[in-house]
Length: 93
Image 1 (cartoon, rainbow, N blue to C red):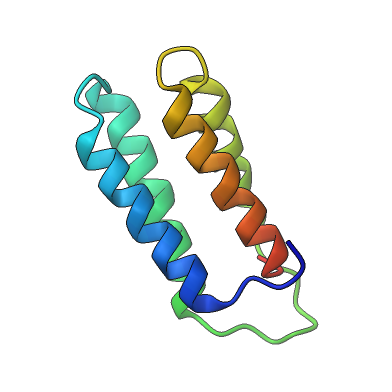
Image 2 (image 1 turned 135 degrees about the vertical axis):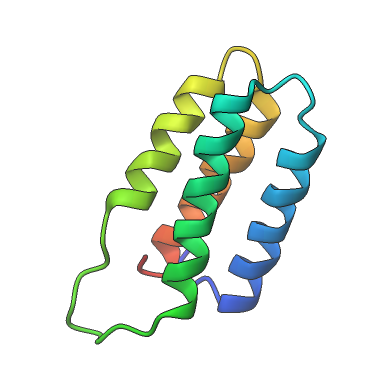
């Protein structure tokens, strides 16, 4: 994905929040970790940064770790997280 626009990122983020709300089998610790990472992503999307300044990799790495963690028990959520990671990469985040 070459250039993700902010609207597609926000829409994708909203979809992840909805999937998180629907993931009833998700343990509370995992739910909190995912919620925290999504809040970090929201902050990244709201805060402008100079174009020459590299984005902080922390949130994207945390998302990838969560995707790996969810792979066995929550494959749909893991796939959604990976799609979102690709969108972030396309947006330069």
